[in-house]
Length: 585
Ligand SMILES: *[C@@H]1O[C@H](CO)[C@@H](O)[C@H](O)[C@H]1NC(C)=O
Ligand SMILES: *[C@@H]1O[C@H](CO)[C@@H](O)[C@H](O)[C@H]1NC(C)=O
Ligand SMILES: *[C@@H]1O[C@H](CO)[C@@H](O)[C@H](O)[C@H]1NC(C)=O
Ligand SMILES: *[C@@H]1O[C@H](CO)[C@@H](O)[C@H](O)[C@H]1NC(C)=O
Ligand SMILES: *[C@@H]1O[C@H](CO)[C@@H](O)[C@H](O)[C@H]1NC(C)=O
Ligand SMILES: *[C@@H]1O[C@H](CO)[C@@H](O)[C@H](O)[C@H]1NC(C)=O
Ligand SMILES: *[C@@H]1O[C@H](CO)[C@@H](O)[C@H](O)[C@H]1NC(C)=O
Ligand SMILES: *[C@@H]1O[C@H](CO)[C@@H](O)[C@H](O)[C@H]1NC(C)=O
Ligand SMILES: *[C@@H]1O[C@H](CO)[C@@H](O)[C@H](O)[C@H]1NC(C)=O
Ligand SMILES: *[C@@H]1O[C@H](CO)[C@@H](O)[C@H](O)[C@H]1NC(C)=O
Ligand SMILES: *[C@@H]1O[C@H](CO)[C@@H](O)[C@H](O)[C@H]1NC(C)=O
Image (cartoon, rainbow, N blue to C red):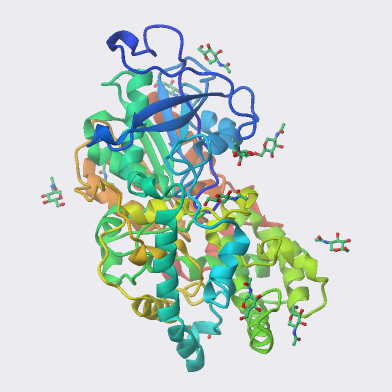
């Protein structure tokens, strides 16, 4: 889940007492009942629906229907806490189903946790999930023989000029394909809704739900992670007077998002201001994608450092006495072997591009590193060496059942991969800046320079949904493009790990700086996407104190990851950080 991976829930009680039901004005009500068991299997959760305008500026267009979920407060209820799990395109219903206890715990149990499937998500909200192809076979045939299915093959940093030529030769083909995909999506069953999905609509939908549950002037409490922080940034600046207690974790830079094309390279002057990104299904929406990769090489260093520190007993790829550079050499050799094999036979089960995407997804969650290095990487090595039965590659490479290379888009819906969802790009691109005539050749040149200058290992990851937006035909009927420096009714908490592969720390710094005295910044001294990627009782206590008492920590507090959390056997986050060059951390 990359960006995603979280939780969500629904709302307060529907029926009882004065507080919840705004029926006094004859407005809509939410009938809470059992959830659809095909989506939510925790029977302690309640679900409901709310109708809202498809277009808040033009009610004549018709209605959307939001599917809602609620986890009752475990203590004395003080209102509702809204949650969005990121993506874009993450399901609020699924994430509350999976993370109810975490969400209730972080908020001290004093709020009903409420979430919803945003427009374009799932099959209960209308408009629902956006599909542009009949099935994966249709998708595969459409993209046959393109980098969409193979990834980009290159050795470290595009060292071989032939790889650059090969990539640039695909530019006109890929541009045409992506333009055609846009048209296919427009012609799909949900095509007429494409301009009604997006973050501004999500913000107004959340406010509509809050108005029904808690009344039209009640403060709105919200937790947004990853792409959910974009909903959060837009919300607090669109409705500053409605801001209650809000935590944004794993922060997209909303200024970059509002002003730059996501596909293009950001220049490092932006670092001076501070900012970040994320992946799909990770979701991702974010700032310009290449700029979001600024921390990935360092997080990779953390992985190989942790492996070297634990040694062969805790990390299968390590030999006695190996340092981080020795581990790196083995991984580079693996990538090179896959690259060479692909050159000989383009149909091999794992390309170097596949392995790089897999490694990239590992950057999100240090809690998976030990398993990855001890279980998955040895299998990948076997496959590349031709020593494994072909079917071993299935789970590893994230290829679909029919052998098609999956991508970050599909990964989010592993249970839905028979029908590739386009909800993530639909939301992300609907929110993007206007089309500027950017060509795919410019996009590819940006990828090459990002790979050579900043993100040596992951700059050439492909496909990545953000690269579609320069060719996507639709923009949302409403986009919020600033200002992002409003004075808020209540102070909010802006949170980030110091090394986030998708939404780097500068995004959080930018949001906190622009909000000034309305925001407090808390950093977690570790790596991974959002602070949920590693446990920190320091941060948990801050969250509970904030939600239950309104207490805020000192600005710029640095929380440590729990010392008893071992990334590798006997090796914790602080051990690894101590070995990284000080210029990296
Ligand atoms: C709705 O989605 C769920 C989860 O993906 C699935 O199990 C269910 O079959 C779907 N229902 C319909 C009517 O498509
Ligand atoms: C509920 O669904 C989750 C996946 O969403 C699954 O891991 C879990 O086993 C299910 N629980 C039950 C009781 O079916
Ligand atoms: C949630 O709380 C409401 C109001 O107290 C109550 O009516 C409802 O039964 C509760 N739902 C569950 C699933 O416990
Ligand atoms: C995939 O989505 C299309 C809509 O684009 C739909 O017509 C088709 O039935 C879906 N296929 C499956 C297997 O769900
Ligand atoms: C891709 O094209 C090749 C010929 O160029 C063909 O043999 C193959 O069947 C095609 N694959 C798909 C999935 O359409
Ligand atoms: C990529 O470039 C960097 C910086 O020049 C260098 O340190 C690194 O070794 C290169 N990686 C490979 C695999 O060539
Ligand atoms: C290429 O690899 C595929 C898949 O492993 C295999 O079926 C095919 O025989 C190979 N082709 C050649 C020419 O080796
Ligand atoms: C691969 O195929 C073999 C033989 O059909 C089977 O025993 C094994 O479980 C399969 N492995 C995976 C990972 O599917
Ligand atoms: C807020 O930002 C805008 C630019 O977006 C700027 O013109 C304005 O002066 C700023 N306001 C404050 C109070 O800093
Ligand atoms: C917190 O510190 C940041 C700089 O790191 C600053 O931009 C922000 O305005 C400060 N917030 C408060 C409430 O002082
Ligand atoms: C909330 O504040 C009260 C009074 O200051 C204090 O006793 C309590 O421990 C605080 N609770 C939390 C969770 O910080």
